[in-house]
Each structure stands twice: as C-alpha cells, then as structure tokens.
Length: 113
Image (cartoon, rainbow, N blue to C red):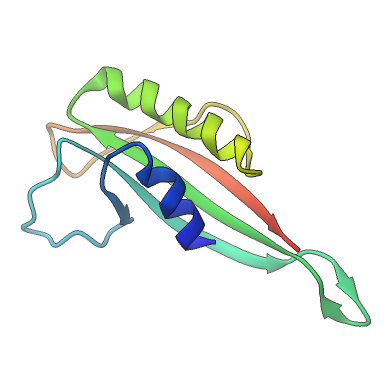
C-alpha cells in the first residue's frame, strides 16, 4: 500500500517523502508530500485468520505557497477517494520545522482484502 500511495501522490509532480526522513540539514523543496503509516490492523477474520487489513496513513502537503497548501491537499483527497481510499474531511493545519513552510494533513484509510 505504501507504493500505491506514493504513486498516487507522485502524479502531482511534487516529491513524496516518508514523514521525518529528510536529513536535518536538507533544504526543504518548495512543495512536497509526506506520509506516515500509523497502523495496519487486521479487519475481518475467517477461521481465525485475517482476510482483510485496514491501512491507516497520515498524508501531509507542505509548501512555501499558502494557496498550494490548501488546494493540493484537497486535490489529493479527491484522487485518493477515486482510487478507493477512505478520507474523512478536508484535513487540518499542521506546523512545519521550517518558518517558510506551512502544511495541511489528513488521515487516509485503505481496506485491503
């Protein structure tokens, strides 16, 4: 699921990183996505074995352009939903380690059978 999520986000033409994986001295790109896998839990069981899983991710868009912060995350939400992801709401603001950047994040779930 990580590869699928990355592939979907890369269609926007921005870099995609695992949250927290940038080197401390690395310069932030002007705009980029990050993701974090919060959990991957069993969902349904048959004969005491899992037959489906719930992948739970946080997806965040950071940018030095405040307009992009809002619009690109909304576009990503729409695209994720088209690919079968469950995304509730329109996201929330999130702080950034860089004073030049702001971000918005959303929780996205995928049911794997």
